[in-house]
Image (cartoon, rainbow, N blue to C red; front, side, top):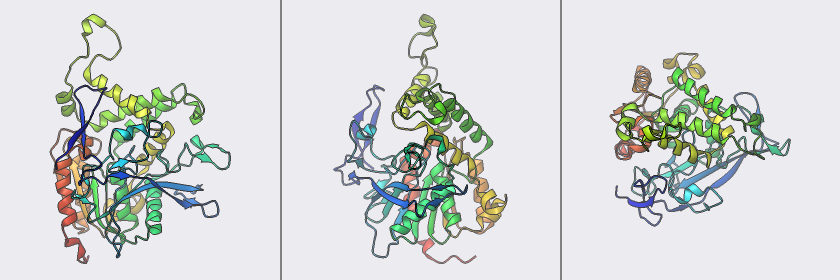
Amino acid sequence: MTKRVIFQDKKKPGRTITADPPDSPSSVGWTHAKRMVLATENDPFVLDSGATIAPLEVEYETYGVLNEKKDNAIFIPHALTGDAHIAGWDADASPEYRPWRLRYPGWWDAVVGPGKPFDTNRFFVIGMNVAGSCYGSTGPSSINPATGKPYGLSFPFITVGDWVRMEATLMDKLGIEKLYAVCGGSLGGQQALEWALAYPKRVQKCIVLAASPVLSAQGLAFNAVARQTIMHDANFNNGNYYNGVHPDMGLAAARMLAHITYLSGKGMDVKFGRRRQRDFYETHTFDVEFAVESYLEHQGETFVERFDANSYLYMTRAQDYFDSAEKWGGGDLRKALKRIKSEMMVVSFSSDWLYPPEASEDFVRALLHNRIPVTYMQLETSYGHDAFLVEEQAVGKLLRAFLKDASSLRQVKR
């Protein structure tokens, strides 16, 4: 896949961002976000907790054309801090409105577009921003109609199951009864799996990348520390910071911590090693000294420009709550997975220690125990958890082959 260099990162001399320009035949081009109200005050959306949200509005994008049979739709849920803007270039971005989109295409532009693995000449691709986030769907920064002020921490707790039911409601309103495929990585992979469990007759192919049926205790621990850094920021104000100074330092630190879990030790050694930004023996300060410190600082600084601290709390907690075995099998994963009727593909990455290959292998064994057709691949990489986004060619080949294969069109009898 040929791409052109279109952006030189001024904060990182020598670093380039590559992507298809909007006029490229391989790009979905300029995109516009769409919005839909899924629930109203007269018909509120009921969450797993029993709480309700009303009104409930979601932002979504679509690429390609839905065919007459409406059987070519693919849904791609986003990861923790992603959004509905999967591919192409945001035509509505401006210096005041989501300015980072002026420099970057959609987060998975490498695999979505004409002729790409998610070929928009063939498929109708849908992305939706989940509730609780801060990219157009109802979340903590939205106005609570009961108070006329932002929800803040009065926003109800939300789960992956809630998101998937919202996504299914969107599909209903779009007239899509069955998805040809649902595909996600990380927290998006949890949503993909939940789709196969909650709506077994509505998903033909399910692709789970860098994710497993439950987050490990280590993952829970990192999320807990990240939330503490936000809530202990002097400007957090119990989540009521929208009319004042935001808890940027806490959110930046949370992002720095999380970003370490997205990489691998080997990858960090290769990329940064112990290179210094300045001569330590001359400065003797606690300022940024090493290249890896500079990288993490940059990640934190750019993150606070585009994400909401309260949303980060809610999103990570939803990731914590996800447990397929507990929800669908009373703690027994094999029992839970009996519900699945989809053809499955599971991809793990050798250096991913947030969702390690061992967890994916346990998942696959439970699928095989139930004689569920599954394709499993572990990709060798030094990029860690982020590999599902970075290893574009390797992942793209797997996606293309799995989506092209017509074997899942047959009725699988079990």
